[in-house]
Length: 527
Image (cartoon, rainbow, N blue to C red; front, side, top):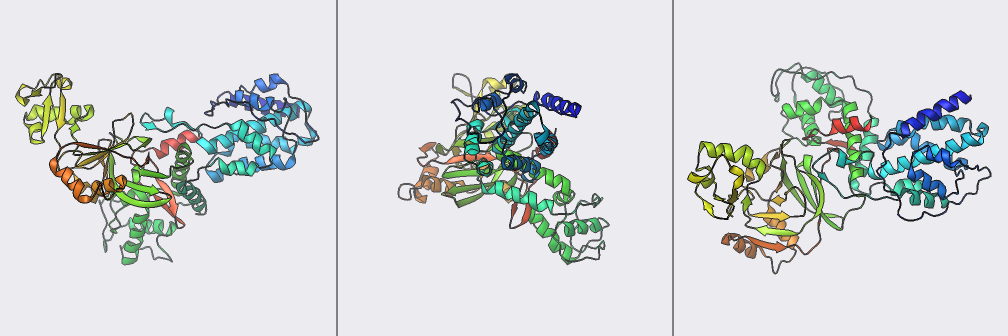
């Protein structure tokens, strides 16, 4: 039996050395732990130190280095939470649940040293669980170069001790989780997908690029199986290879749930979405739950929220959605960054300075072919002294020694307006000279900024002053073609985020993972 204890403890301690907690250490002394249990034992400080955790050391300083989990009800609550952590998209194996349950099964026979080890393991893994619920298991700063989210500080020890002393561990678990509706919809999505049976439907393959109503195609048999499986088609079906009206209507339902144009035509996007298995969709939901734990738990009173893969922007004011807009976002090569910021300025009739990436990949090659390329686009070249440069005298070997500025106007690359907010990526919300892009379903087309549909109406809404900022006044400013900066006095936060799954009205909703982040994130979560 002693060999078993020794083996379990060695395995645990080795795994602990790999842990790099994200949570900041508390800056103030934590409250004393009130222990009322009959059996408590002293914990050797060397044993505490062997866990290599300052957080754990500070927790037990508050208990005067005595065990704290002598209460059966509290232990059972922790074990239950860790065991069913998969219901929240977490991995029970991350919390050594099997080892903990083995200890619990022998708790009355544990020596003082063994009981101390069990106590430490309970605290260590429950704190890890709470921290994962609050801020996620992984840190996006180490995963992505174009994510800028506000830090989430959390004094785990103080929170745990207060809950311990007030017998409110269940409230702690609830309070550390996001209050957002999307997070709740993701938890519901995880529950919904777990209710689906295991699927064994084969991959849908076809030589044709699209299937239309009344077509005949062997792939339709598996397509119908998928539609029946996901409940987009009801009842039974003969599973013929004919694209009939019933299947057509079911495909439109499926397309709508996946953010596709619900036209009933089965093309590349629909084929791709149909070929997701239950397992992969579940992994996608879990990846999105992790992302939402990176985001702030509480929202500002007024805010803009952009869901990059959904190509959408919403304005929320006092918990009410007041504006909804289609947006165009960055391509997979020029991704729109994920960030949190505050709206500061509206610029009417903006100029546009060609950024380095576009200069290198687009402008320089075009200028080498045609020196009048920039002139046709109303872009002026300036040297380092601010003097205008004739395209004929442009030095193609030193293109970065110039500035390239497009004059204001309807055909400016930024359109008629841009909305500025502090960030390290030189991005903003703006109008576009390609207004037909909003009619497309796939709107991953920009160079990183977010282009907004009908932005002048949005500007009037932001300025929130009908008397001073009427439509006529804004139209007059636009007609002058003079760059005009207006400070935004009402505080709006901007949440420019990325999520590809949620639920609505007991239905699973998915979006195309345009930057291919979901599979990789899930893999990292489970490794």
